[in-house]
Length: 198
Image 1 (cartoon, rainbow, N blue to C red):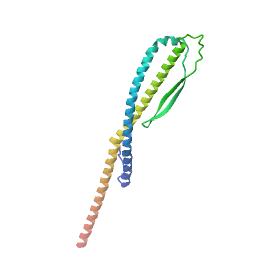
Image 2 (cartoon, rainbow, N blue to C red):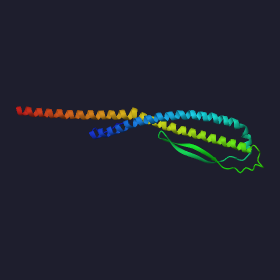
Image 3 (cartoon, rainbow, N blue to C red):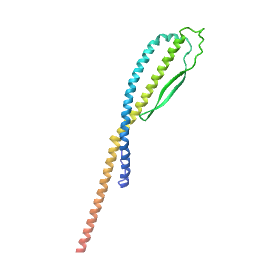
Image 4 (cartoon, rainbow, N blue to C red):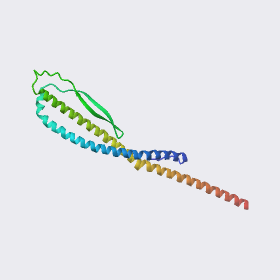
């Protein structure tokens, strides 16, 4: 990772700063990862329950399917009220409310069961949209958890050890350089002294 770098004190300082940033960020990332795992587990349970409710509703309304196909669209979604939530540092859109267009039903000319069928279709549409929103939220949170886990692994297993190793190598190089310079001075001094004595 850190293949080429200068063997000097300013590089050590730069690497120490980088190391400090990563060591400070690591506990935060670990907490975020844990929080996301917890929220995802809870959300999966909630989605499972909503799927069961939706499937039960779908089974109940299956009988109306042939009837609805005979009529023009009687239920139209007018507006979806979404709220942006921050879950463990991840922004997700949460469906708050589904609004439908007011239908101009002429009760004298329409079958008696149409208002009840319309209500049932609205309930079905609302349940479908809420379930879809929960699944989108889950996908967003799982992607955020995956990226956080990758960053944790990058810091823990690659970058922090690489910076530590680079700092150690630079320090050893500088110490060796200093030792060689000191030894060279001593040798030169000894040669000078031996020349003066002869």
